[in-house]
Amino acid sequence: MSIAQLEEIVTDAKVTLDKAEGDDRKELLLLIKDLEEAKQTIFVKTADAKPFLKKCQDKVRALKAAVKHENSWGQESKAAFSGFERAVSKLRNTILVRTQRAT
Amino acid sequence: MRQEDFLAMKREVEEENEWRYRPENVYTRDGKALVSIVSTNDRQLKPAIKQAVDMIGGVRQALTPENRVLLKANFNSDDPYPASTDLGFLGAVVELLREEGITNLTLGERAGWPWMPTAHVLEEMGVFKFAEEIDLPVIDFDSGPWMDVKLGPKAKWWSKVGYHQSLKEFDKVVFLPCMKHHFLARFTMSLKLIVGVTHPVDMQYMHADYNLGKTDEPMDMKMIELSLPLGPDLIIMDGRKSFVTAGPAEGEVVEPNVIMASGDRIAIDVEGVKILQSYPRDNLIKMPVWEMPLIKRAIELGLGVSSEKDYKVLAS
Image (tube, rainbow over the protein chains, first blue to last red):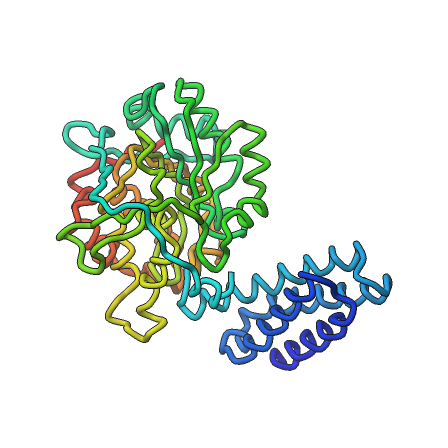
């Protein structure tokens, strides 16, 4: 389930790429890379990962909806992107910590 | 911060020296270090902090109005208290110090590297806004200038470590740790707080043990040596809430509801661990605290008391 959930998140994130602009687009590409790398970790298959993945999924859905609503990278999309960025950062940091590479 | 960005960070230092600031513990009675534990169940936060400090001798025992004082709190990540310092606690400490005439205060901080840049963490946690409101200067220890400090013959894992050069500008240091279980170091309280004044690039070596599969190089044994050049004058620990599993950024939260104070890092951390042990969990502190390698090594390094005979607990 967790890998399928991650793949769905990545798919949704990629849908918004066309509209993303400037530095946000560069960051979005990196976030997609982060999510692809997360698939390789044991952490995402654990129960502990569920709330982090749920947050990413909720935020990417909000981003997708905002982009669809604005049909551009407007204020609503930027705000939603910020939320998605935070959610993925939280997942990435937790993976780093859990794999004992950082505290 | 992504790992590739962290590994690409440059390590530049302005000078190399043998700088030390290891103040004598002035919070003692009859030759014994003091640790106070004050319940917040029936007290407001600020009176509890004041009582904890007054019980061991008061702020003015260690600090005087002409001192330039560094406050080292715990903004390791952008996660809420008890992962990070509670702004209410920080504000109460600042008010208390100012009421005692200690007005030259600065907050200095570096977040853990996954959460860096520190400015992002401080922004997310509302620290910059809060600091501006209470007129508290903040130093972000992410960038330099840095000094390489030789740790001397006691150190086994390091010959020198980068410390923020601004540390030399302060007369006194106050540690404001949270009280948490730590998934790797067993616990993080006053002894681990030192990490946040060191060069971020040095964290690559500190954590290299696991990254490179060198499990004979435990991170906590490297970490504890960072305390050789620098110690606090006063420690005020916020144990109203704690993690008893995982940590440092998340975990199961319990509410010990205590404020603790001491001038001795080992004594206060030992008492903090004992409090966390009163919440039995499947965690890393299920062993006698004096047998923990980190505590044993801290004693070897002379960072504080060496047994329970060396300190007295004052509870209220």
